[in-house]
Image (cartoon, rainbow, N blue to C red; front, side, top):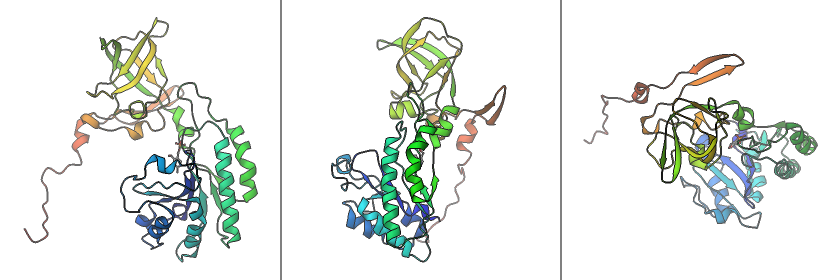
Length: 328
Ligand SMILES: Cc1ncc(COP(=O)(O)O)c(C=O)c1O
């Protein structure tokens, strides 16, 4: 167990919803920190829910102290509760409050929200030190640095550092970051082959062999992934939907896209698939997940072979070992 999971002040990008994120604390620790009690006293939510049960309006109020979001393992406590809870953690004989952290959201392209959040964290650190907590060593400003999916200008690391460094240095703590997508997002692409084309419902459809189970982001979040046609460059462009082979309305990789006319057998690279791509892939509809190939200059290696149909049921037990509670 590490203390960073115990006290994680969070500022969300939604206005007003800022506070303390408790990451599965009760479940992991079982240490009786009384978090349910803390939450109940500062929020309108209860700790028992398995789903977020506070409406968006509740967390987006104008009052910065007006928001609590509760999910299965995540509990956001109001700003006023952070220091009180940190003191409880500090007083616990088995816990050390080593890190104060925030995660303000994702795909952020402007350093300003980081500066704002960091200002709040620095204020909290000062408050905790004044209250006698001398164990904090790390200041974690989370992830969320944006990348280019279409035409966004990613956060420039030098500009970003210039924005956050002065405030971080003032605290004297070690600056920690979690730049997941920023590191791997642009490094990955999904390669797919055109199966056929057809005109339907007033639209030109390009059917490809990758579907929503391989890259769920377009269908799930309605986001744009840039596409590069490997063989069709230079042909006249036409407006198309690029759809997958899963029999679902939501099975698409792009809608209303203008692409050079591709034909069956040609390949399309779907860019920006290195983060939230394969890790969110599934075997939905018994579709086997694609191979993962590492490319390094002119060489490549299959680092995860294409899943086989047998793999889909390899974990199943055809002959159940029945157990009873003695009553049956
Ligand atoms: C606590 C925390 N750190 C880091 C990240 C990574 O964010 P991103 O992939 O946008 O950099 C996330 C993603 O939601 C997160 O919840």
